Length: 64
Image (cartoon, rainbow, N blue to C red; front, side):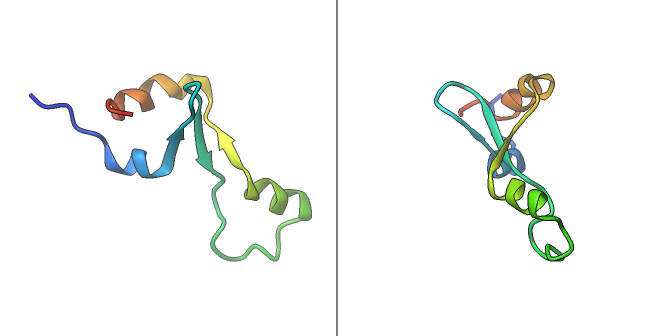
């Protein structure tokens, strides 16, 4: 059977050149005025995925 990419995971997570996984910080669309400045600045950057989940996520994206 053909290996297929799990599309929702591939849209949310980016694999870097060295194999690290990056995801966007959650809760960015609206109600951001109530957040403190540190939270707002954290949301601008991509967040690395914990190594515990990396193996499972990579199995969902076999061609990446």
